Length: 140
Image 1 (tube, one colour):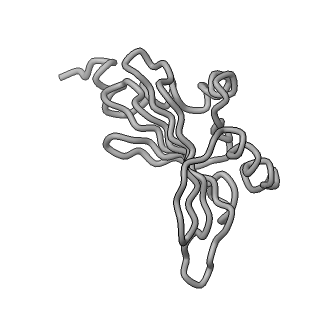
Image 2: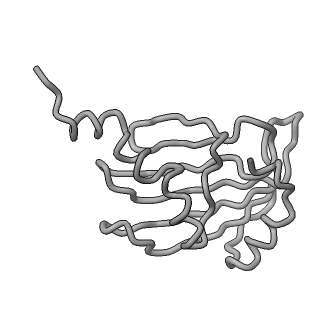
């Protein structure tokens, strides 16, 4: 029994990886979002795809793209600024959540800074300032 291309695309996640993977990076840059480096690994899950940085513990660690069917719902980026190797946990992270509407237009972007002792929302300027402190190798 043949599998129709759209069904194959749905189950293999290619409809998401081709549309919202590294090919979407130019659009991400235009929107002020963070691109997926070419060198990153990828894991497919039921309702999300995780692109991850395979090297180190600091910098842009991963991007989760959440979807329903072949439509993007959210992107979540994690940037790490501190890591406790003994406890194997991040000590300071910035989470950037981008939500999309049904037409794949950005609804809103939220920036959340978390430390071991606190969590607070920050603006884009503060988030970009923090990210600029990372070395280029931390984010590739």
